[in-house]
Image (cartoon, rainbow, N blue to C red; front, side, top):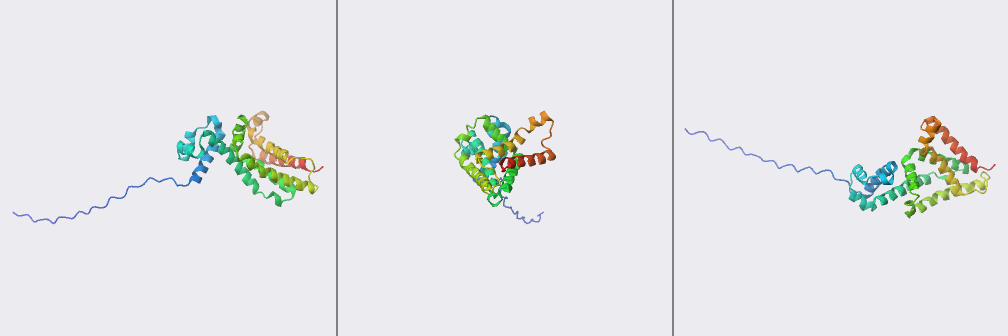
Length: 229
């Protein structure tokens, strides 16, 4: 008995879906470099030059040791680049304070308050500077940029001070670098020594009340030091 012949069903073969490509990193060298510097600042700040690990920086930035060495040459080269970047950022923000547009005393108060706040909120910067002082500044001495970065900062203080002297507000005979040193020292100590000082004198140097009062005191000390008696 002949069975009815069934029509062959045409099997439609779907084209295989193209394999998904793994997301690739954006080809943005400047962003990659900036990301490495940001992560490295924390790593060097927490562990110092000797304790920092390039492997950990590479993992955190999703790059490779080879890429880091391509950009910075060596671990020491990265460390120096981190130092330069930290100084560059603070000087860039200082330039935005527009001190030249303010009355001398008002400008001085703004500069001191800014320095205090910057140091308070950038503990990694403080740790980096402390670490480099342990190395007696040997890596910073190799920098070709550091001197250039700090020239505008001293020039701004000198201009502010000289205007204040001319206006009869500030006393004569002071040096711009010395004024800068005093501002830095009073702002730096509050962060660098907060743990030891706080334990010895039973102070919570991280409390809002303490910080507010200390900030006012530091600003006032600098202004009274410079002000004409």
